[in-house]
Image: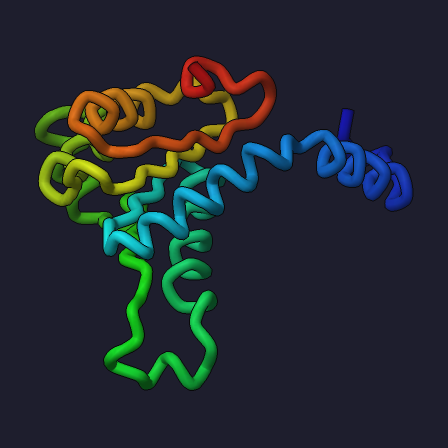
Length: 159
C-alpha cells in the first residue's frame, strides 16, 4: 500500500509494476479509436469526477493542442481532432446538477453535443460513478463509441 512510509525506490518499483501490468492491446485500441475519430472528423468527449475530471481536462488539452506541431497551430487548413472535456463546462454541470441531478451532468451534455459515431472516453477510478455510467449507457444506446479508463478492478464501467 502506498503511504507516507514508502521510500522513493519502493514507490518507483510500484509504478513500474503498474505500468508493466497495463494491457498494451487496450492502449492500442484507444489510440486506434482516437485516430479513427480524427480521420472521420468525429468528436471526442472525455469526462470524469474529481481527479479523473482533471485528468479528462488535461487529456483533452493534450489531444487538442499538443498533438499539433508548433507550425500547425497557425495553419488554418490543418485538420484537427475535435475534442472536448465535459468536466470543463461549469455552467452546464451546475445547472444540470441543480435542476435535474448530479447523476445527469455528463449525459445531458452528450444529449446536446453527441452524435452517432462520436467517441466517448469515460474516466473513473472506481468504475462505479453514477454520472459516468449514465453517460456511457446513453452513448452506447445512441451509437457513440465508448471507451473506459478505470482503476482497481474496473467496476461497472469495465462491463
